[in-house]
Image (cartoon, rainbow, N blue to C red; front, top):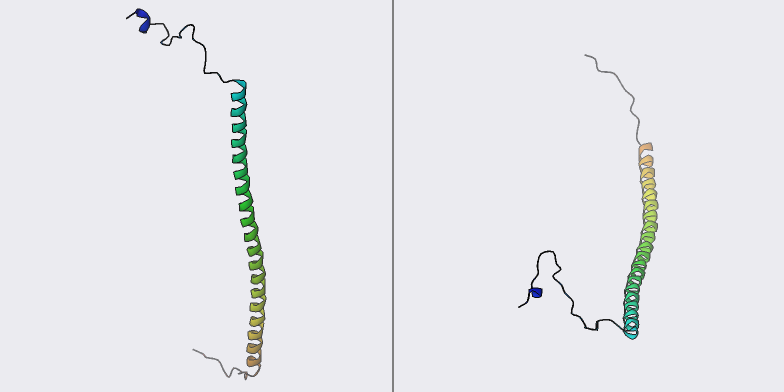
Length: 110
């Protein structure tokens, strides 16, 4: 076992073998393929996000339609309640006209 195998103080622990060809590099065709795959993946992510946004916008539009319908119904109910209150107040007014007024006869003294 030689000294070069063990790490000594002040030296790097990694050594590179000489004469070795760097076979881990990608060629131009492999680079192009990897680039196309990455672009496809980014496009897929973009399309899923757009689809989610569109589905949420349909739900929002549906809820806004329901909200406007409920507001119209509320206005109709308020008008009906006001009309019924006016009918009741008219009946009370008619009944109060037929009552006999009482004049005070005297006062209580201590």
